[in-house]
Length: 68
Image (cartoon, rainbow, N blue to C red; front, side, top):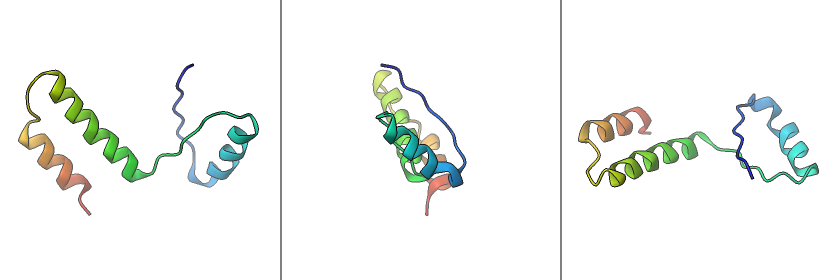
């Protein structure tokens, strides 16, 4: 099985959702919050693979950019 990521206009989301459902294609729509969570998780995973820590500046930049 392959993974495909599509960026679609918000106004067409319902159309694509219907299409994927009719063809029984597993799909997931990401919100802005989900994308931010994935980015933060990626940074953490990278740091753990390196057996190190995330640079404090990267975390602060992320929080500053995405803070509500």
